[in-house]
Length: 507
Image 1 (tube, rainbow, N blue to C red):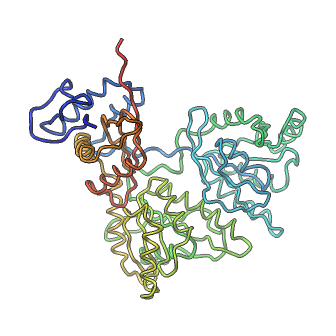
Image 2: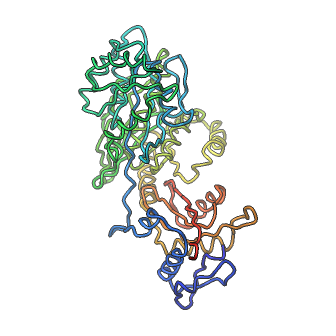
Image 3: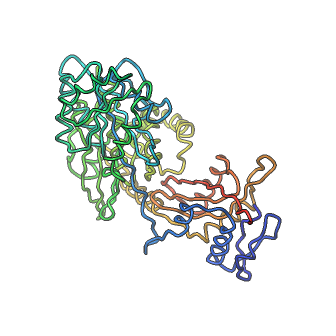
């Protein structure tokens, strides 16, 4: 760690003055001198094209790097038991989606990061379809419509052994109206004999059926190659608007008060709350002016539980929540303060953090909470929200409008943190002091040395650290904690990635 520097007054150094592992600590006259010296010192190490592109990237006049574009979204849809979750697991190369013969299985996650042939994308498993005897076509259609609307491209899975059903043909109509690219996957084709069954699916009018065995992996590569041909480079749904009002997602489990809060902020009944599950197929966007500042609010109300629809309704509520988060810049997660925190509450918070969005946690129905409940709530926060202690917490009442002004201040704070950029010289000066006072523990008798660090992007702030060895997860969390103490970042997640680089071999 001796290679990092501590800020002090002194002569400006040249790259040659950068110390070796056992050399003295070098001082710099200013942050710019430090940045030039450490950047020059990196030339002694093996750097690839991605490293050089990062080091040469430019920030705009406002000191902001553009947000990383959203990955394209590929949805896997189809009737129950056609092999969607098996296909998802096969694409991911690991068992993530729950595979059961019972339709409507509730999953903790609905989207997964995936990769094929060097292309990254987001894979959405829509295995939670609810199918009842009554009104089967309308239920399948409404659920399929949600999945289609949130995707950039669709893999439509049909059981080649069964052939096209009336439900399949109903979904085909939706696919045609959507205009989205569609890959027709003829699943359960385990050998050449099954390819004749797949050929019958030409009748759906979606182009050539791709014969696949999700169970054994047969034909998967050819299908994914076809997917990459139609998948856009960036998602059309997750991209942030470059200008205009900031976008705020109101998210949380059903009946927590999202629509009530939006109506109170707007000062009018903008959103009608329907008790029937699935009636709101897309998040409702509302332009609301608060204290002279306009905000786009993305509301995910309209999903309510009914006894016979619990798993399906929750699954699609999660899909809509994911979509609202991806479209937003900051998410307000509403939690019912009057009852214990649920797994669903923490799951929504995790979705926001994983998506890299700014975060505010609003404890709603504070007016309904009695004094006996308060100590239990504090213990729940300490236990279940320990990973997001950096998020602003606001106690509100959507019914009365109490403390909604504090909610607006919390939004401003989180968005400011989300946009924050630390100059490279100052960042390296901070790390130099940090590792000098708290060195990384030895690993295998060696101590990894941090060579250089830079902030690659904002929205959320993402830092890349070049080092001579692997930086343990615990030490990365320590760096993140100290970054927050030094620079704030209240309300914004932070990403820290490490690139291990070796010295060039002398020839």
